[in-house]
Image (tube, helix red, strand yellow):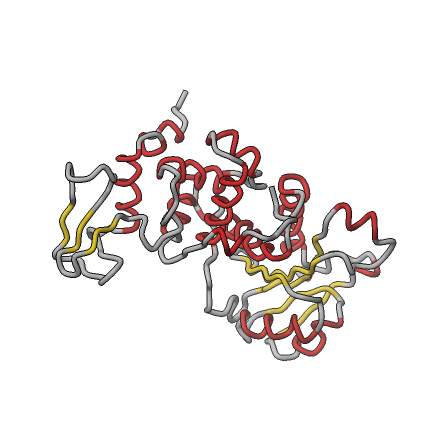
Length: 311
């Protein structure tokens, strides 16, 4: 029987954890986060109780690989951070803050904040348009809401939060939380994120009637008439994305503050975009998330104050 990846040394020893993170974030050697210098740097081994401490002799500032990342100013041991990143990356439908707290032996409050920092690292910030000549891109919107909200609302979607997803068939997904599912909110996202030479596929919603004419082709499937596939025309790919997202949000997280919904979308998008179909296993996926930790600070003050936060 093969050993679990969680038996690796960097998941249990902080010195090994620092070496592991440094190898991912500094592949060519340490870089000073203060002056960006990479030459006059020395490791303060044996001169400090702080693991992984370096000093830049150009700007005279000490630093570790934590500085300028989601790990900065955290009192949690780095090896526990690595465990959390791996667990979030390896769980298809996510892992709750309560379960993460039990696994790591920390408070739920710490696990909740730690999870949000990791989701921030998962945000890609892609700017290049999706699709291209002959590439099919499915577009659809869905709604996510609280269980108690459903009980209060007799009809309609006023209590739910709209989510727009764009999925390149056989490729990646980009999801956005929009204030409301209107032409004014939806169309700019479609225009900015999809190449005009793409083959656009949607349902019969009027949201896409106008913008569809701007692409090489636009085909719609009529869900209202119980039609879901017409040859190559369907939105089953994006519906599959929504299925995993909703199972995770309703079954694992259960409650989500609207303020944080964009980070949860980034988490599910990240796992989909780094899936096994692309030859990316749990270890590689966690490594990619680790590389995304650089330059992404998130303070507790930024995230607190949302009483309906996910746990």
